[in-house]
Image (tube, rainbow, N blue to C red; front, top):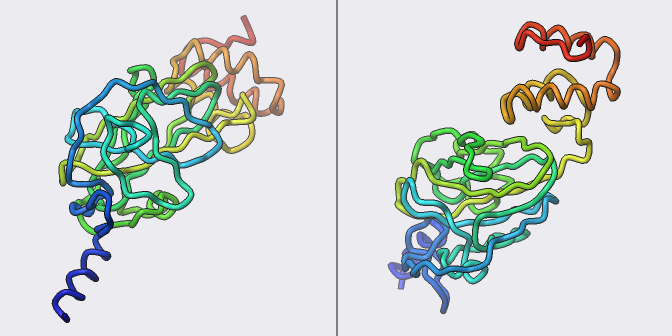
Length: 242
């Protein structure tokens, strides 16, 4: 009896779900049985900060949602207050901040794409320990791979691809937070030089100049002068003086 109790206790610690449903024997948030892929409708997400859970397998293979929302995904361990993502690509519109965080066993990392264009990647981390199943906790844990990406106005179509998957499968989370101020590209609530830099890195020089022209009235004269000086230095173009 003592041996049986110890085994169950250990299983709970590593995330094993002993239920009548899937058995999460790998300890990384998904069941150890992989369903076949199926064609299902694309998934629209609500950009209100809700965490969406997705599943993944090996590196280089696009992530899927979680069953039953995505029949082509894996069976994921649920986390309170989160939603199973359905079939990718995950779509929304408008300027927003996209955050992706690993969960469960540490060591996984991801590249994030918007309409097939890379937004960047979460950092590589050691495959050691676990942050648990709460994405807020995992996103704040430096041992877990997490990153945020700013996207501008327009339609967005997200896909996620693991760049490291030590166990070979698992589950993780993403969320989309709408930016209420369309001039705010870095999520700090106002318009300044940092927003122009983010727009340049994300969408290129034409978009950065357009953002400046549209939003310069939303900041101080000193900030406008600072942005003009930076654009002159960086791009050789000061649009307000043309």
